[in-house]
Amino acid sequence: MKSLQFITHYTERYSYLDSARMALEGGCRWIQLRMKDAGKEEILPIATEIRKLCNDCGAIFIIDDHVELVREIRADGVHLGKNDMRRILGDEYIIGGTANTYEDVKKHWLDGVNYIGCGPFRYTTTKQKLSPILGLEGYKEIIRQMRAENINLPIVAIGGITFADIPSVMQTGVTGIALSGTVLRADNPAEEMRKILTAINQTDNHRTNK
Image (cartoon, rainbow, N blue to C red):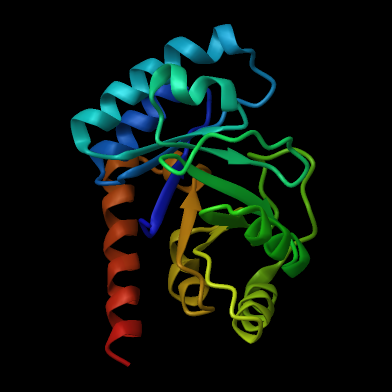
């Protein structure tokens, strides 16, 4: 599983497609298309284009919520919220689940997901219906409980993470991080993505060499 996932976001400057393209240009190889409250007809053309971009870069492409689109556009998988209805896609697809507590993680693990998007780390404006803030201690506690019960699932930290947060968040034991706003707010999003990937790799190397 990749250490960095980029979640698409629409801003005054960039479209969903723009945001994915810049993330890929910056070296990110795991894109999640999130278009909350959009219907299939609106999502389909954008998802199709992002699928092509990801194919060109050899990147993983995940769709948020819309299970019915995964096979249609040949996405690599789907990300489902805590309360979303699950449908069988088959072992060839990646399935991610959203968690805010250890109990959420355990439920997803029992349901057979492939990774957890866990958060929020802090308050974020890019997501509605925000769950309680976790912070560094929240991640450490969830990882501790997982290890105690031998639950081995990739944990991706998400929610308001900035460049400065990367070392401390990665050192909690999470597998990776997911970003959106901190990349798109930069003067040069592609360059910011390159800096972030370098910081994550340095943290990974530090953990490995300990």
